[in-house]
Image (tube, rainbow, N blue to C red):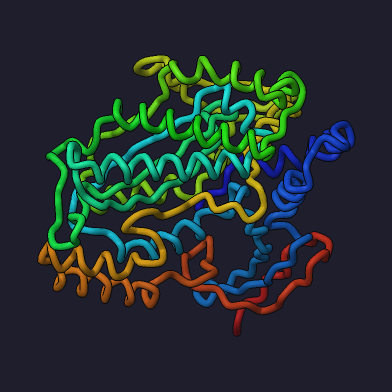
Length: 398
C-alpha cells in the first residue's frame, strides 16, 4: 500500500497537544483514546519488529498498528478479514442497497445520545425492512439484512445514517419456497420512509419518557415533556430520506461495496491534500452539485478539522455492523442452507465455501519487502516505548 504524504496522525501529532489542553474537560475519554491511538499508530511508542527480506536482504523496521477502529491506517486488514468471513454467506440472487437517514434535528441531539439513538436507528431501519417485506401487499416473505452505520457526510459533519445490504427476496412464511422480488425493484421507498418515520418517533418518545435522553446547550429545554412534544411535531410531517439503489451487478459487486463501506472511517488519508498555516485541506464531494463540479476541496482550521473528526467516535463496545432477519447471527447458517437448497445451489455453495477455506493458504505473508516484494522474516522484536532510531545497518548475507 502506498504511503500517503499527509495523514490524520500528522495533524493530531502537530496540533493535538495544544488542542487537548484548550479543550480540557470538553473531550470524552473515548475521544482522547482515539487521538492517542492515532498519534502512536505505527510508531516506536507501540513497539515493532526488525525485518529482513529473504529475497534482496534489505533490512526494515515495521512498527505496530494501534488497531483502533477509528484509525484510517488500521482498517484495510480488518475489512479483509471480515469480508472473507462473509463471502460464504452470499446467495446467488440480486442484492439491493438501501439507506436510512435521520433528519438534521435528530442528528443534532443524537450526538449527545449516541448509544441510544444509533441503536434505535439500527433497530428501526431493520424493523421497517422486515415488516414491509413480510406484508403480502409488498413481498410477503421473511428477509435478511446487513446494516452498516455511518455517522459522517463528505465534509465530516455529523450525519447519522445506515447502509443496508439486502438479498432480493426471502423465504415464504412457512419456509417452503423462495420468493424473489420484482426484477430491479425491491420495496417502495415511500412506504419504507413513512413506516420508518412513525416507528422511530414512537420509540424516541419512549426513550424520552424513560429518561434515557440527555440534552445540553440550546436543546436543554427539551427535557420538558411538552417542549419535546412540540419539537417533535414538525418531524412527523417532514420527509424522511430513505434511498434505494439499483441492484448490484452480481455477488462480486456486493463484496466490492462492502470492502469500501464496512470498515470506513470519517476520512481516509488519501483525501488529505495539505496542512499549512491556513489549516487542513481535504477533498470532499458536494452532492448538491452536478458533474465535475461535485468534487471540491475544503480548508478547515486544524482545530475544527480535529473537532469534526472526533464527532464520529463511537461509544465503547458499540457494534457498527449488524445482521437482522434471516442473516441474524443465531440462525444464519441454517437459513442460508435452506435458501440454497430451495434455489438449487447446494453444489455451487459447497464449491464456493471450499475455495474460501483454501484462500488463507494463498494469502500473502504478513511482512512484504517494499523493494522486491519477497517475504520478510523477523530478526528482532522492539518493545513498546522504545525511542525511534535509524534502521539497522544493512548486512548482506555471505
